[in-house]
Image (cartoon, rainbow, N blue to C red):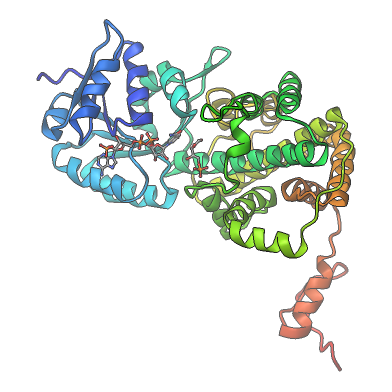
Length: 468
Ligand SMILES: NC(=O)C1=CN([C@@H]2O[C@H](COP(=O)(O)OP(=O)(O)OC[C@H]3O[C@@H](n4cnc5c(N)ncnc54)[C@H](OP(=O)(O)O)[C@@H]3O)[C@@H](O)[C@H]2O)C=CC1
Ligand SMILES: O=C(CO)[C@H](O)[C@H](O)COP(=O)(O)O
């Protein structure tokens, strides 16, 4: 086989095969490698007429078929499979070749791989890909980070296949080292928060106000026509309509799904890294914590027998609940973006926040009609440390905070857990407090541990013998 393929993919499962077919549709000749012959055959069978798509199971054949510098992406599960693929591939690569990890790898693993491959002249990129199966096929949002000069080789291909917001592609260089995987990690942290917030609104409507699935679908559809317009609200409206094919009564599937949420790590890593820096992202933390709590089903059942009681009836004003949800969505984005702003400095990644917003505008799971508000904020101040510091957004939040408080009070009164909503309001209130009660914590620390404190009226570090 001649070396005439533009792009190679290792791992042609859900994401890899769809991304490769998307490239082929845009006129690039592509080749996929997988350990299983049936995957290679399936890839070729799925190719559109007139496109150049090849599937192979021989790594030598794969690498020899690629134009140099080779552009190869891996879309395999994070962790050991990525290192296994690198080990198998490395003997077949040359200096200047570009290797992209498009999976949800932990950013510190990506940094280690960049360091390891640099001496051999291999440009290693960590690239977040969002949009799921359909996004990969028709236009994903992509977050590549690594060597900026090498990015120029990838740019034409990635821009061609990316989702478009207006005429702008939802892909851009996200910064040095593992910046691409860092941005995707935070994207997923925000994704966790938005999903938890939506589930709390669902609980209020379902258990609190007694809505059936048809009514739920209507409310979410209606919200999706206003300021809550977003991929996650849109698919939620759809989910309530899907009936269980195995149920003779054709009841909706959502009611049959076990209430234990899975997770693969990106949300937890976002919280862990935020705590390491440290940056406060309590709504994302709470979303991770609630997924973890959901797993303890047996203990929850036991506790409900001891202490459970039906929730009280809640009178829901759908417009007010929508405003509360929009308020807490913005707080979740604000927390994630404030983490990116700090991490960019702390790790020297130089993440361009305006470009992050552009990349999230379409194709990704957290795309929403709220992003243009953030675009304006970063256009005014590209290094804005927190969205809450942008005056028009501060006003926007102020106009919706009352709705969030009313919904929170009603939920607490009724016994419906709205931990993420509560954390969003608490974050908002704490962030805009000129003075927090933390002076008392400092006094306590100094009392029991001589940890010292600073004063508001004079410079210096002080200690008091409190118990004399
Ligand atoms: N699904 C989604 O919506 C999204 C997924 N991602 C990320 O993309 C990555 C891939 O996910 P997805 O496509 O869904 O997963 P799939 O399981 O569909 O595909 C994984 C592919 O990797 C191959 N593979 C696994 N281990 C190895 C190995 N050691 N060497 C070579 N190939 C290997 C598998 O081959 P075989 O079956 O032959 O073993 C398979 O073709 C993951 O990191 C995931 O987190 C990112 C965004 C969205
Ligand atoms: O990256 C994604 C979307 O952006 C994936 O769907 C992600 O893997 C989902 O994460 P989890 O399984 O932890 O909910």
